[in-house]
Amino acid sequence: MSSEPEFDDLTRDIAEVPAVEVITTVAVHLMSAAAVKCGLAEGGDKDKDLDEARKLITALAGLVTAGAPEISNFHAAPLRDGLRSLQLAFREASLVPDAPGAGPGEKFTGPVYS
Image (cartoon, rainbow, N blue to C red):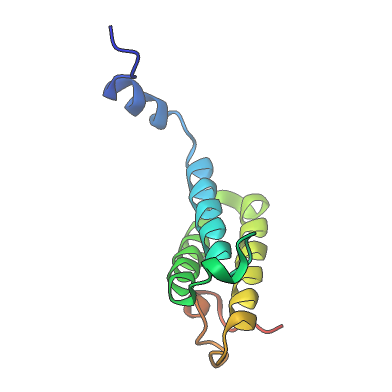
């Protein structure tokens, strides 16, 4: 008898997870990856990759913007705060900052100022 769960069991488990939990979990994973790519993690500049950070922050902004009305302000507010912090960190880490409104995710959130 195998100790690995059956596919049907896994499907049933994910079906029981509320959408708000899935959305916030994905957002937290995007935030964590973006923070590493902005050089904010323990590894610092060693792991910095602003091209990758831009993609992750833009994906996060799209998810937060689209998902916020569905998950309530209680869940969306901290995600928005984290997104804004990452956008500002990206701006600080860039040697040549983007114009206001042209930074990662700003097409979804609007310009971010420090």
